[in-house]
Length: 467
Image (cartoon, rainbow, N blue to C red; front, side, top):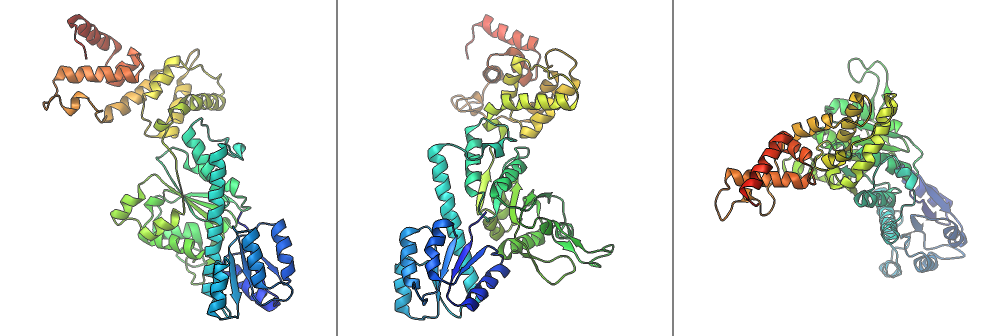
């Protein structure tokens, strides 16, 4: 959770007015202090995001408090809000470390904007400090929160450390990654670490037209459209004080993007059929498997929404970039599948891991899970069969184009096109490398039988050719 805003003024009416302005703007955690002598003991006991100080106060002046806070708590932004409209005083305060200088009576929007910018600065400083701590110690403070995510990858551990660092921020989070990598699991971990008391609500917005999007998220008034016989709260209201997770955000229509942007910028929304805005304090986390920058170039996604969403960005690497996780995931899914089917957990053959390590997994972890469940469903007894895996991988590999590696005959030899024999020898060599010498797996990758591969290898040995 974010830290509170501390208001310090010897006038109770000024404190009440300022706190009401902040609360109506969505800043709910506000502490007020009338006696300036209580400020330093309070800061010793409790963290705050920002201090708003009056200058003219009895006992301990605002100038003296500013000097002490800047010296003892330099990470806390201090905003001066005073009736003293003197340039010299303002310059002196800024030089002493004030974040901003506001003259009473201050305009509501100016005051709220200044406080929110100071809160964001405080959050950013805390995140940087947390990231430094994580990088230096290489440890997680809440290992248990990430337990549902099966991994032994350094890349994923770096993701976890970043999630811990930004969890307390109220800023939006953009999670990117291919389909099936576990974006919702990361969003749930983020919510659990945030300390938010409200619910975690997930919704897939793909395929929702503008009306469905508005009705699902914002709800409607009675009579808003034909069939709306009763008023209904949307998911935003249900997520009060919690996290709203919007998946497949790249599929939103232009008008829905505008409504989401308003929700992010102003923390307000309009239920269908209503012209009275409602306020929300839900944290917004979104995910996509699309390249939003490419969508922006095509005019299909708003640039201002993109930059608002990526206050924090988490990219989850695909399974093919963390193949060390495959054995862990296979074991986990074998146990899960066997339990769900009331079967004894089968033993995987040693060559299964080699076969899976050659596969590019377009569907990532979700695809691996489906493969394991299919194999366990077919399984009778003894060692797990490789057949279903070979079928799936063979079908996918036949549809996939492999980019030529440096030095391959497909790049041309001395400026000429490679011969059929050179191409065949290259493919066999690459397949055997991927399969770590296992001829059965290599044959499966090539789409031929093991006998056919043997025949080609024997022919090559007899002719004495060398690749």
